[in-house]
Image 1 (cartoon, rainbow, N blue to C red):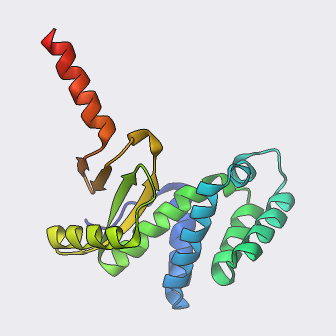
Image 2: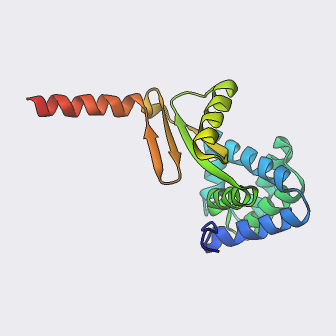
Image 3: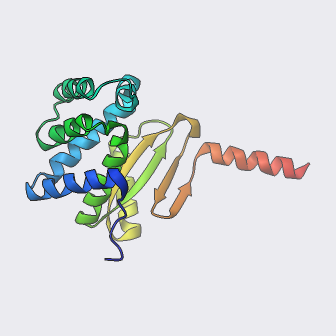
Length: 185
């Protein structure tokens, strides 16, 4: 199909295999939640990122460490097997791309579109729900949100929806003012 999501390369192959298994076992939502949980762990821990990206650790060390992290986080089943397999195959460095490709496949399967939201501070659930409703009304599709916190934008938010981007960040506004002041000289 022309509108099939583009998931390619090694990360795409792993994500596609996981997607097909999760679909077959009817565990798509739980695997998706587990991978979101693991992605949040990666965002919160520099040590975990170092473990995932460093070639210094052997496959056995990575599998053992990832197993401990998964146990502590309560991630089990197909998701845990997948992440341990990725570690055993020395492909843990690409786990973020695998998770992103998996999200794309699930969204496509569910008829959702993904929106990336960048905020300066964590956003309250009620505000996320309102934003999701606004985006749903604008697109007439269910919207899955990927929220990232980036303190560098200072305030406001940036919304990326497909090829469209709405930048209401304080940083962008300040840059516009600075540029206008330079031109006024």
